[in-house]
Amino acid sequence: MNEHTPTYRITDLAESERPRERLARLGPQSLSNAELLAILLRTGVAGENAVQVGQRLLQAFGNLSGIHRATFEEVCNQYGVGPAKASQIKAAIELGNRLRLEMPEERPTIRSPADAAALLQYEMSALEQEELRVILLDTRNRVMDIVPVYRGSVNSSQVRVGELFKAAIRRSATAIIVVHNHPSDDPTPSPDDVAVTRAIVQAGKLLDLEVLDHLIISRGHGRWTSMKERGLGFP
Image 1 (cartoon, rainbow, N blue to C red):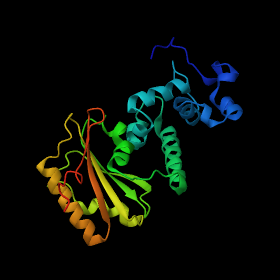
Image 2 (image 1 turned 120 degrees about the horizontal axis):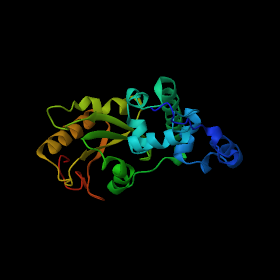
Image 3 (image 1 turned 45 degrees about the vertical axis):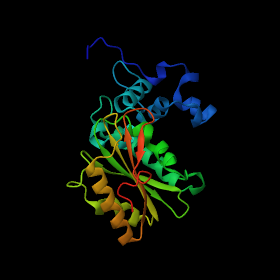
């Protein structure tokens, strides 16, 4: 960084535009994601105030969900962040997640494969490699949590079926929906997808935990496949 590069601070903004002052005056809902991150970051770096650092983080990881998915080290290594600020960001996101789970009346309810796809389609269609996630559901098919399980190739030789049920058993979920993405534009199930689905459904029966569906989401806008609707891997 050039020694003549000016350092921009939150205090350089007009008082009415500073995130903390605006939050106190108008409430947290009035702030953008970058401004909320700025409150956690507290300070910027040479050439960027905290709001600009927050904007850069959102661009680097795609959105808040991307920051949530990123490892602690990945966030920590962003310029201007470091261990203390990365901890604050990760803690704030986790608190928000736990609050959501404590308010069951506000949890989304899954009534169809389309409902489940809508939960994850925007985020997972942008992924550059395969990921597998499990949606945990309660007795009323309300979402309890969405748990990432695998990152990388989802095939029958690599997926350990027991891993998919760990969180569901621990959280006393009554049903799950498995979701993974194809980084291509084609959501057509592969033979491995069918084999994995069949093994998951069989394991669910043994554990008395219903597997409602296995969805495949592709990069194409609005393109996804329900394995259950196609009768693939389900009896």
